[in-house]
Structures are given as C-alpha cells and as structure tokens.
Length: 284
DNA sequence: TATAGACCTGACGCA
DNA sequence: CGGACCAGGTCTATG
Picture 1 (cartoon, chains in turn brown, green, orange):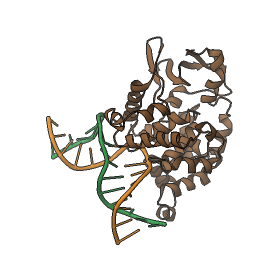
Picture 2: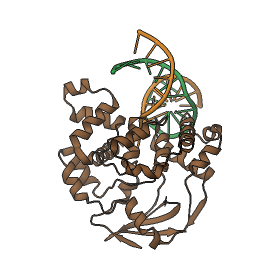
Picture 3: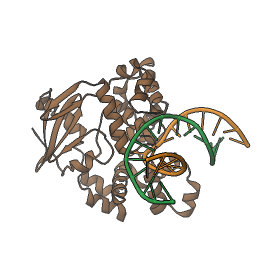
Picture 4: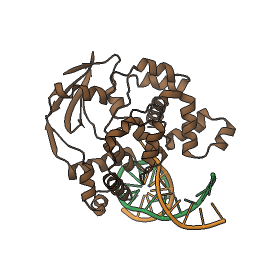
C-alpha cells in the first residue's frame, strides 16, 4: 500500500540516525516492527510504500502515517530551524529525515539501554531482549520479534537481563517496569501531557535523567521542542554556539538543554537531531 | 548546589 | 594480544 506524503521521506536517514534501534536495511526495502506487526517499507515517488503482517495494510495505514509523522510539514520546520550554516548543511545532506512517533514503552526501555553505550551495542541489547521474550514475526526472509511487554519484564529476574548483556541498566529496566505496574501508571495517557509534565513523569523513574527523558519526549511523545543533550550535542553547542561566558556558566545537562530550547524554538528537537546526525556522520 | 566515582560490557586505537 | 580507555548517562556519596 502507498501512503502519500507532502515531502520526500528519507528512510535511510530517518531509521538509522539513532532515534530507533531495530530496523533492518535490505535496499530498497526496510524491515521493522510497529504495533506488533512486521512492516516492510520503501520510498515511493508519492511518499512511502509498505506491506504488513499479520494486520492488513488497510488497518495499519494510519498507524504507519503517524509513526513517520507524514502529515508534519517539513518545509515549515526547516524554515523555523534553518538559522545557521551547520543546520543548513545538515538539512541539505539529510533532506527528508523525520522525527518518528514510536511506542513510548519501547522507546523508554531502548533509551535506558542507551546510557554510556553505543548504537551497535544498543541494537544488540534490544535485539536480545526481543529474542528472549518476543513472538516471532515472518515476512520474506526476515524474522523479527515483538517487543516485550511491561508484564514480561516484571516477571523475570534481573539476572536474566544481565545475562542478556544489559549490564547495570538491568536494574533500571526492572524497577521502571515494576513502578509502572505497581502504581498503575497509564503510559497511554502520556501523550496528553505537556512537555514539562512529561519530563517530570519520566525523570521520576530510576535510570532516566534529563537526556534520556528528552529522547523519549522527542521520539515517542511528539514533543518537538525537546532537546536531548548528550556528549555530541554538548560539544557542538560549546564549540559552535555558546559564548565564552555561556560556556562557563552553563554546566549541567539541563541548563544546556534550556539554552537549546530557547535558541532553536518550538522545533528545537529537529534542529538537535539534524545537528547530531550531521556531526556523527562527519567523524566517520 | 556542585563534583567525583561507580556502574556493565565490548569495540577500538594503540604500545 | 591484553589492558586502559571510552561510549548517545545516571545515581550516590561526599564536601
């Protein structure tokens, strides 16, 4: 099935810029899991083309459009954030790269896994998790697994997570699932929270600080003003954006984040992600 | 309020 | 080839 988009969709940049961790590339197709369905997708002159199983394409169409934020106007966003040469270069290099709307639970666990790690290892960690708990989905030659549920995580021992290679993050994953269950926290309602309410809710969990909370807000809760400050973004800000006195006075992740949100405005998260992907790929 | 260490693990640039 | 170092952070214990 084809879903039309008002702007080119750059699947490679969108799916492999570090906002999600379990898509597989088999040009021109990409395989991934959305809402417990195996999705096969490629770029199309009108937008994107996809197949799905077990749910039919017709029933999943809206979900896929939401996942890729296809109704968001990229040209408007570009004109909002394109205020300097670095952003401009990145927009030209990765034209059509979109911020996704992922499942918040999967996004939350994925980014707990990301702390002091690297993309290769994060991918392996999450793949181990899905292989241990998930149900297999088949399409073409691909086998992918559904993502573990909150209940799945609550029921197993922390040692199993450690044996899967998740390290010290294991206890954070366990305690987060436990807290959600015990306190009957409804993740489904998070999309109705504003930025600050969402941030407060997320940093309440052990293992989620300012950076990871902002990743979850940006990549799954549709908060485009969110501005995750990691090592890369901090270096970029300090080297290219901050004055000498700002470099001295802004020390914490949160203070740098506030600077970024103020400087780049309501689409700060887009500016953040384009800068992040640009600088990461330059150094390779 | 601020700043060091600790925390798992494995890929990587180098004596 | 092995050990220190580091990676898309966060928590905790101290001054």
